[in-house]
Image: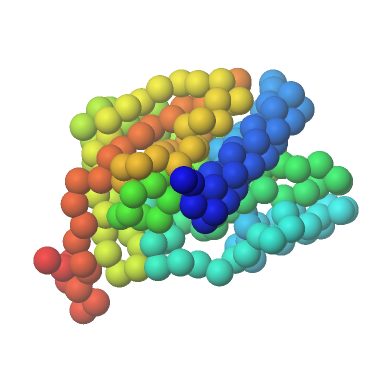
Length: 224
């Protein structure tokens, strides 16, 4: 017999995927060929992101969205092989002029709120601009196409550094929202628009957890 709590969890996950799929379809239809790298994905609510979008009419967060962080929410992203070292800001879906759209982090990687927590089973989804000629929000993932299988991804969260190994690099359609789905293993998924200046597809880099290190809070010390 299926427990009521389990049934509710499954229904909730399905509902989330349906919403994500609907937003992805709306965005890919509206922005294909426009040069806006929206699906570098998502919000919620860094003050910078709010200031950048808040001047437009009819702006509001998705009902129920929250800016409260969890201990496993990413705060910093490092990929040594491509020289990437970026802050991570929470992002999500916002409404602009009555339509749901992905928000994007301003000059940072965006953490999709509600996806996995660093170091735990689940899918940590991070997105960033490969370039941003219209919104001028930076190009934090400009070198992401240079990532190769075996490269390491370091995610910092809650006083720990989680190291993931790149196992998969692929290019998908913007509507391929399954790459954001929950997973039983601990992984991180990085997403950006691709190719640069065309933005017709999404580059997806997937890494699986290798180890966790507790950081030493003393200045200059890494940890053990």
